[in-house]
Length: 262
Image (tube, rainbow, N blue to C red; front, side):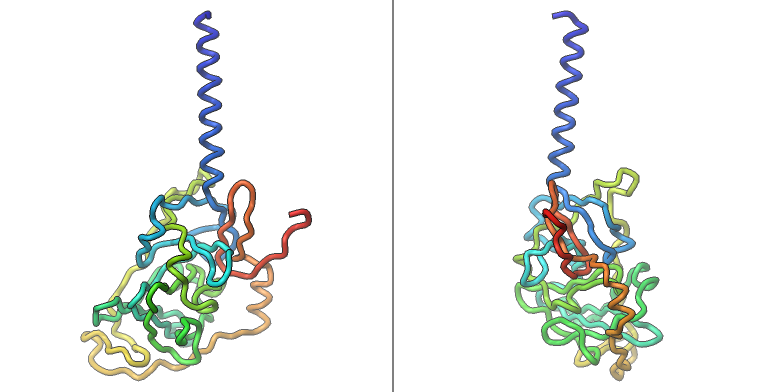
């Protein structure tokens, strides 16, 4: 065989291997469908989970899991793990104060992220005993085998505030890398930060010593379940319907009717 023909065969084999690898990676990825994790994740982007991470969920991770009681795959941020205490204080001046006390610790932290501050307007208080919204803010303990999850776009996300605690057994893995589009950063950007709180602490949780003592429960600021919010979320953005070759991970949560022929 002539050198030219050998080179042509080698190039053809290389192209086939590269194409096969690309198809394989795409098949293992999930497609973001919805706006509940903006600006961290945007619709149409594709993600890969970290291998072997299903049993290694950490606070503030972005994780893939099945929505409680369904087979719908969603992508959200993990806030609290078993034994942690979580709550949300919502006031007109500060509508999204996400609070966390880690299991075995006394300090109450505020979980903050620039994305939340820019997008939260009408989030409502939390939590009820099942981890959903409540009329008044109250810290709740995450039960064994469960976790508390939120979207990075608070007003457009259906998360624990709507569905209650997630199940650790339903987690398929942490999001490891963004593989599409090529122009997007591979990493997911900065994680939220934990700051010891000196503001109002709801219910039965002792404030951090820097707060100067007891605080009254913050004023109730109920979530406005009005036509405006329903209209805004009328186009479903968080329900996952499997696609070929890869599933979709939705962020907010209403199931879209299947397309004809799907």
